[in-house]
Image (cartoon, rainbow, N blue to C red; front, side, top):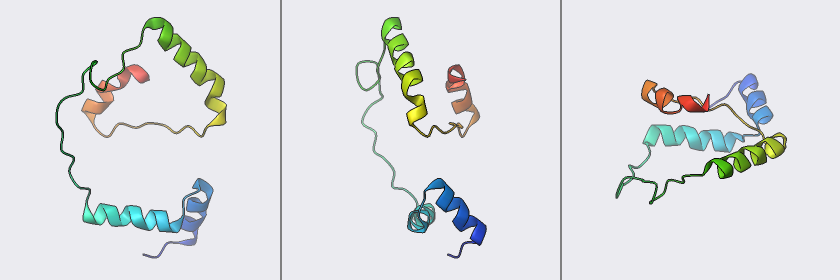
Length: 89
């Protein structure tokens, strides 16, 4: 696939190689294999449940270190996901 000069500049600014972009586009074309789910995640199996004090500690840790990372905005892909993650906004 050919990219415009602007595309190439955008990729470079975002730190993404053309090879990575081409692999991602190929994955869109061929599809992603379905995942076999064995059971639902629950608080005892895969979901972490934090106490208020642990949650506050993690929030403080995030606030202390957030400038060390390139944080991007999370945009849910559906209305159901928007409602599910509404508390994060």
